[in-house]
Length: 431
Image 1: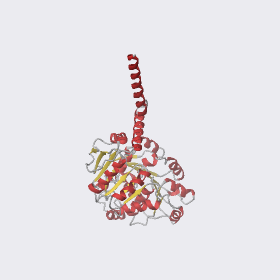
Image 2 (image 1 turned 135 degrees about the horizontal axis):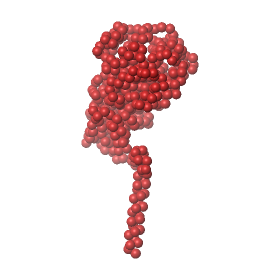
Image 3 (image 1 turned 30 degrees about the horizontal axis):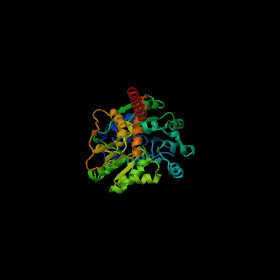
């Protein structure tokens, strides 16, 4: 199928040609016709397969041109980085129109954004919190909104956004079209979506939590964090010395510490990206990575879904994500637009449980291939504090699997008690 067969208007076809897209992706082929027909749609597709354009193009064709001062479409996303990414897609595809798109997110003063809205806008892309903040300041008139989009719907409803979303649903018109898009859409999130979707058309181009086929998935067992850092440096300097890479970690502290370590050991430029960073600093790091001015970005999961850089060759999971959804979104930062990519997961003994849980949720065709640690990578001793923390994590995992499990401490205590009782029995026999 071609974009012409999807009945895309000429001005948008010209913008598509400028963007370098030759043909629509499966999610675009399946989603655009029912959206154009006014249906509510739930779209589930692999990350990096064109989900954003699948709702951007129909919305632009529906809006057509600038009109009035109030917005007619609202796109809600979970993070600031994703607001900027989606806004850039709208701007790119609306090049040959006068449609006005405004990006609203926190971390900056509301004055400038209020001024932008006051000048007139047709489409708003926003985080839920900032939208409600500006609405309560009487900065947004929502009465003409005819289309609502929740992008990354699973994350929106799974991260505590539901109270804000309910507030927004109360102030926008009831007669509207609802669109939900994400790479994963678990059953419990689907139940939440039933609050505001009525007989939606569900479009699923691939099974849920399915990584893109062009991504080679690898895993390596590593004894501790210091050895992990040596392995990360080896991958970035010896195996992929010229490729752009994303290093994912679980916490803000890890992102800060690991980015500083890599700055000293890896060439090409390294930046950290996490929620403690100032807004301008995060946007600047993203722009540097997108432009190729830096080669490595160290990020937490909070920022992972707003990173859309097709040139990213390598994703390193320095820590194992706690669920399959985060894993899919992490490795979906490479292999975008059907390019080749590599996702390498490094796991210590305390993370085997989480990696096993991730692998169980992946389709049988998506195998994470085990590769040994190269001989030239220096193996560091495990620090006492880290060994203790890993043991506590393993105990916690065992308790979740078996509520009667009492932990390694109790096992050692029972062994000592048993040994002591044996000694006492032996002593009595000798007497």
